Image (cartoon, rainbow, N blue to C red):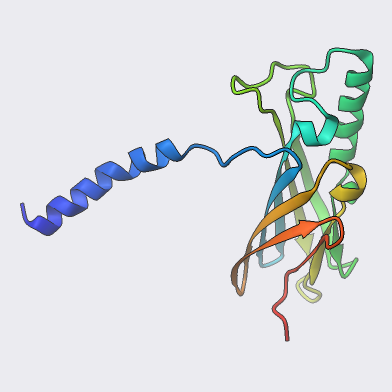
Length: 176
């Protein structure tokens, strides 16, 4: 076997091991992560939110007050109008909202003790009026959110942004 072939085989064998040891990104209280993608007429937003940031705990609710806080948080997360505002207003319509937060629904917390809510929003957008901006409204609904780290995949390429309460909007179109 040639030296180049050995190198390629070694790389192929090492790839899964290298990625398995990376694991998930760090879970940081106060920080939500969002991935935005715009592909044709589809806008997809996926969010990962630490439960501590949403309700102040990361385990199944124990008291009536905690159960009430969990139910209120789930209700707000299920309403796309509480999460994002796409502008221009008529450019996109909500097609689907999915919330995964089993801990808030009474299931046991993960072994590492760090519970997250996963939120997926899909919009169908007008071909004639492309979305220009996305404003994150989570800051209004959840006071413990300090920032949202955004990764974007847009027709013009990839990008990233850090959104804060004072600057909650990301531009989807290139600057002119």
